[in-house]
Length: 458
Image 1 (tube, rainbow, N blue to C red):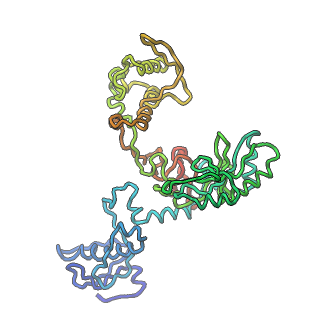
Image 2 (image 1 turned 90 degrees about the vertical axis):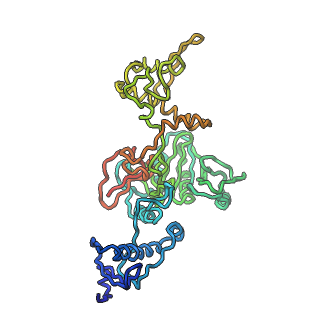
Image 3 (image 1 turned 45 degrees about the horizontal axis):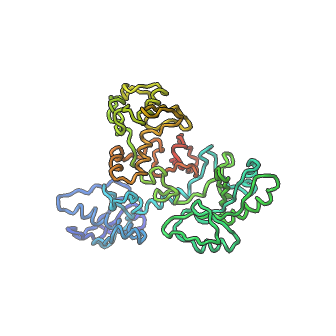
């Protein structure tokens, strides 16, 4: 075959010169790009040697060379195949149905670092929109922030905080020293206020959040000038972010960079870590970024829906009633919600099933009656529910036997379902960051309260 070396050729073809891998005899091959190419031949003619050991091996070697030293240590050293040269070949990867690590946080995307580019892409070209109204997210001025704070009710106590460190590992001795030198007296570290004059020792390998206490005020007339000064100082110290903490109530995050004026919601600037399931800023707060969660499975709690309560349809509590305190509570529930113990589980109403498994509604209290040979009485209270009770006991107990028993009712549940918008490991529950759009695409209609922090649109 005549050798061709034009640049135009390399844009449209892959040219292999002098391939000698295994049983290949110094062959030259020209393969068209962007086509489905099939290599055929007799057994032992060198099909695999050409496709995998020569062309793919060189593409893989070029890809590995483009990665960081950290990633290369997991992929190993790729040797150059026995060939004079290959032109027009792009870096290549091969995805197999196995992983090089059993760590659930290590995927094909993270090992090959393709995921890093995706996170960077979303952070740089994504257009922020408010999850509440769908409107664009805009920057806030100092005056706009002050105007919102002045709407607080008279007498409201609040403090102005400036984020100095946000969820980063380290002891931050230099940061604390610098804050003290600037004249500040108190800081809030991981939610706890500390005086800078005292000794502050932070664990090096734990992520910490440090917020500078700039001012404390009470909402009333005549504080505007002082408030403006405090906000300007906090924005300077906090690199454009300020936290207004209504003492004993809620916190408000304001940003001179991004906010929704209509919904009065402030957002952080998009960063690649916000799209990482290995970062607390991007991981789902329910599954911690793993996509699955071990939790109590209702189907294991009620294995036989044809049984009734009196025959033990709810496995953890057994046959009920049995004359104990728990039975008295169940009898009170039966009286309040009008059900009996001989009705099969499948025939109970959805409300009764919900109450038995997950407890009474928040704020709802019912009359609980109890009677024994020595005691008789009643009180108003709520029913915890079988599943919350097991979850609480599982986290609180130190007994290995108790944990083993509760684990019989647990299963690995995938978070990639409609309730999480189909993006389980890329969603959060706190709604602090907006929906992300690309170009003029409209959002898919989903329940943002369930989807959480992000919506992704194609």
